[in-house]
Structures are given as C-alpha cells and as structure tokens.
Amino acid sequence: MTGLTKCDWPLDGGMMEKYHDEEWGIPLHDDRKQFEFLIMEAMQCGLSWAIVMKKREILRKCFDDFDFYRIAEYDDNRLDEIMETHGMLHSMPKIKAVVNNAKKFIEIIDEWGSFDKYIWHFTDGKTMVYRANQFIMPPQNELSETIAKDIKRRGFKYLGPVTIYSYLQAAGIINDHQEKCFLYKHIIENYPCEFVD
Image 1: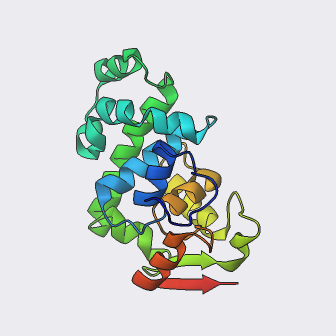
Image 2 (image 1 turned 135 degrees about the vertical axis):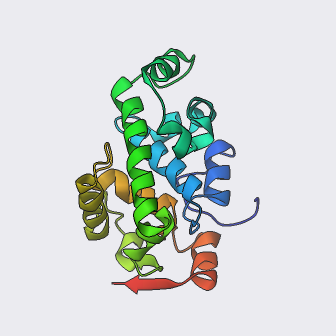
C-alpha cells in the first residue's frame, strides 16, 4: 500500500511493512489466527520480531498451520521432528510450551465457546486506544498484566505481561498505530473503540 502514511517501525518495503498493512493491529476475531499470534509472540521471547517474522512459514509448517487441536496431540517424536527441522527456532522449552498452550487454548474454547469471546471480554469487545501511547508506548500495561495473570493461572507458558501486550497490539485489542498512520483512523472509524487518557 504505497502512498499511505504509516507507522514508523515497519517501513522496510517488504515483509514487516506487509505485516503492518494487512494484519498488525486490525481487530482479530478468528481463533486460529489468535493462536498463531500468541505462538509467534511466545516464540519471540529473547529474540527480535524480525527473526520470528522470517521464521513464520517454518513455524506454520512445523505446527500444522497453527491447528491447535492437532498440536495438542503432539507426542515426543513429533517434538523431536520439529527440533530437527532446518531453520526452526531450536528451543525445546518453547516447542513444548506451544503444545501446552494449545491444550490450554482448547480448554478456554470449551469454557467460553471460543477463544475470541474470552480474550475480547477483557475490553467488552472494544479496541482500546490509549492516548498517552502516542508519546510513550509502554512495554506492558494494566490490561496486559490482568490478562497475563489470568492465563498464567490457566497454565499457559511464555506469555507474561510484556509478551501479552505485544499480542494485544497485534490482535487489534489495543490500537497502537500512530495517529498519522492510515490504520489508526481506519480502526477507529470501523470498529468499536474505547479511548483512555
């Protein structure tokens, strides 16, 4: 999408910019995509986001297109196969966390009907727009702390308040596009939002 004013961070003319323009921060209501975003954020712990984005297709291949029902059934042999996949992020604790999180994700679906209903209930179905974030974007906030505490209680791994904050940005539960960005206005005009000073 050339010619549009955008956030400063993704202007690489390639992968990051495409992710920004087509996915990042647009309110998301698809459970499989929610799981994908959670897994990508968890895998990013200790790494740059660019590295995870470059590995996205490998992650998709290793984790059956982020099908959490299939992932929840992985055995040790499957985990070893993933570890041996060329180009994969070689962290067995993170790979095991993906399987664990798939099981916990399904438990939330069983309880709430969908993960979407669960995650959006924290904001009453509205995208949060924190006006102060236009000046200083925090690494975490009260919302991400609340959600991280709840999912930790439910047994999720590698999803602390900083990681959850990044996920909330990606899933459009928080609108952290810069005001100058075309998507900031698009989201405000097309989705239920709540402004917070």
